[in-house]
Amino acid sequence: MISPKTAQGATQTQQQAPAEETKQEPMLSLAEQLPEVSSWVPEPLLPAWEMMISNPWLGPLLVATLFYILALVLRATLFLILHRLANLTESGTDDLILNQLKRPVFTTVFSFGLMLAVQVAQLPAGTVVLNNILFSLIVISWMRALFNVASLALEALGRQGRFNIIEARTVPLFDITAKLLIILFGSYSLLMVWGVNPVGWLASAGIVGIAVGFAAKDTLANLFSGFFIVADAPYKIGDYINLDTGERGRVSAIGLRSTRLLTRDDVEITIPNGVIANAKIVNESGGHAQSMRIRVDVGAAYGSSTEKVCEILQAIGDKHPDTLKHPEPRVRMRAFGASSLDFQLMCWIDHPQDRGRITHELLMQIYNAFADAGIEIPYSKHDVYIKEMPAAADKET
Image (cartoon, helix red, strand yellow):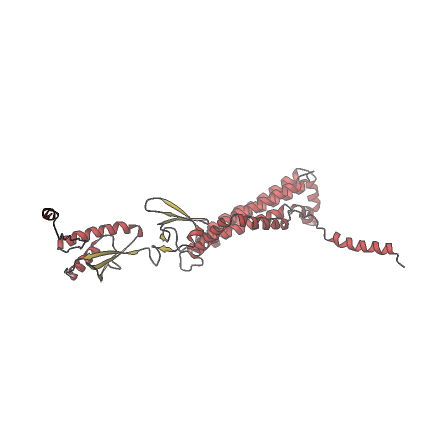
């Protein structure tokens, strides 16, 4: 028969057991998980290995030297073969990518050899810290190389060619995304190297992210708008755009937070992406080509020869050196105005920034040509009728 005290003690033991099982052991760093070097040495070479490591300096120096030579040989032979394969292609991007990978491959092999040398040295303290530093160097070296590799690969994929995998306007978006992912995975790897549990950091980052989201909602709105502008591409660098708020200029920079316009007065306007994403945008450089059409409105007096007016306007549009011949200039009569016959000269020009100058030159040539041809350009006239002269009214009184 079990006494009540014994039963109560068994119940407490059962309740404490799950609590003890839920305790998590501290996370080990990668350096602490490294196996002994002797376990990697083949059994026939164990006697020579033990004799070599008996010297506290000879063993580590020999291991470091062997791995340094191995890193040099591997880098030379491996990349020699890869470069020969890369020469079979017409693109030079693969050669640039291989050049970026040489350093991390050498760093990985040599750092691994230094870790083994540190383990062989059997230092009284600091072995784990040194190995963690070497692991960190490997991770940082690969992060740096992948940064450059991502930029080179995206530049090659976005280059205009027969097959376009990525459009050129979306290259900055993919470049930023790739670098953010590299930083994310690199940071996670560094935490694993130093034995830091990332779960607590991720939970803290979530709480901090909510607070930052409320505090910087305008900045985040501009950031996401920048992503959508780059992806949707309503304009690109070099385009001339007009906004419904009145700004007009050439796009000089597209950032994640703002877009910059350079006006004809050489004044740079910075507009937040959150504002410009909700604005009506008129892209004068859009379409299949950068060229645009300008319209010059001209009025001729009633009684003028319409054929003569069209002939003069057509000749002026054709002779101007900065108007395109294809499509050719056109003249159209638009309406019977209140006091004039309304005509319109339409010409195509190469660059939107030349619109003001070319319009000015066309207007001056039209005025001179109409004056020479005797065609009147109607203007506002006021006729004053005097019913009674003031002097005559004074004499009567």
